[in-house]
Amino acid sequence: MIDNTLRAPPSDPSGVTGKVCDWVYSVELKDIPEEIKTHTKYLILDGIACAAVGAQLPWSKTATNALFKMEGPGDCTVIGWDRRISPLNAALINSTFIQGFELDDVHADAPWHANSIILPSLFAAAEHSRKGEDQHRAFDGKSFLLSTIVGFEIGSRVGHALHGSEMLSRGWHSGAVFGPPAAAVAVSKLLDLSPEQTEDAIGTACTQSCGLMSAQYESMSKRMQHGFAARNGLFSALMSKESYTGIDKVFERPYGGFLSTFGQGSSHSPNYLSEKLVSGLGESWRGLDGIKVKPYASMIATHSPIDCIAALQARYPNEFADPSSIRKVIVEQSKAPHAHGGQEVKRPLNAVGAQMSTRYTTAVQLLDRVVLMDQFNSTNIGRESLWDIVDKVDCIWNPDFDDKSAWYTRVTVTFENGPAVVKEASQPSTYGSPLSNERIRKKWSMLADSVMDADKRDAIEALVLNLENVEDIDEILQLLAGRVRNPIEAK
Image 1 (cartoon, rainbow, N blue to C red):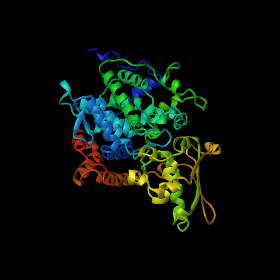
Image 2: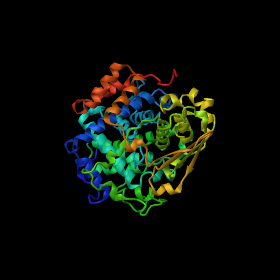
Image 3: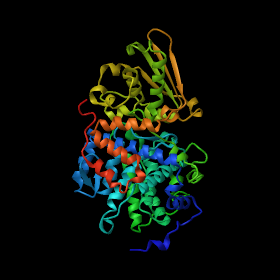
């Protein structure tokens, strides 16, 4: 094997890619503010909840059984199945579970789902790396927490460098684009790769970045696209560990580089902002700070309309007492959320299409006053009373809103008798009034109770919230390995 210490530094320490690699290698847990460490543990808890809830959903079963048919048993845990598979497919499928019910985290201005990228790649890397001469190696909670923070921060900064939500407007599934280099740096940190190796991992990861947002139109593969990113980032770091080289200086290459290529077609000038990757790195945590936890089981572009309807219901209880009295609902949004969720929907509609639809989720809030798991089982999706309201909802792109904010929304509700009522929101409450750590814990309990017993729930929670004291993260993986229930099976 090549002696990796001979080329330890990145190819250009003064360049953007080199600075990222040097920071990834050198940052220590003591450098991280306490509030960032604490909040990250709650984010991890939320990601695990989403994985457990997603593991036995019908579309997750389809994907998992297909993977089992492709290959034999492996080294890595398939969450909630009591089965093991290869590291790459473990990262792929566990990510798919986290994305399985649109309940996972989302970034406020660099849209990606961080847990679904970082947790599966780190879990798989840790288990796979215990083979052969490293079979007795243990990855403790401190190294896992630090690697998660590194991945969360860099992935978010990659999104900032590409103007965040504009990627959605241009048809890219932004998280599947931002995710591979994020997974690559997280795994590189866990495995203690040199800056040079980390650069190779980033380069190989970036050349695998992609994801089309047309996946949102009812396809199961929408759930899996962040999984492709987790798998590809893991693959890249594992290859780099074995001295396989990748693209050097991939973030700053003017021809065929990551930012220069994905920046093509941007409406902004300049097309990309490479300095966003490194400005204040290690001092400001604006990347990780932007990761928020969802209160609704639907895609983020639907959240502001749900918020507006909920606010109107609270303010005008008599008018909204009978949903059949509603004549029309007009949802106006800026370009990105309208492009993401404003499409027309018709029956038959599956859970993916429903969770991605502003029309459907607006109608659900009007009828049920809640947008959670039950609203997306097949019985509830098919309700005539619900579709009577869906047909009254119009979604419109208002170009004037583009200058106000990326998520600006106005909802106007008119009734058969009485005046129209209007509510505006500059951003979803998911961003403006994010869930506190305690509310994230309550969400964890609610989701965990739907798929596992209380003893397992409490054991997982105790380990995650005291992650710095965990000697081996295999303790967590052993608890996650056991089979879980389908949360909507009996609904």
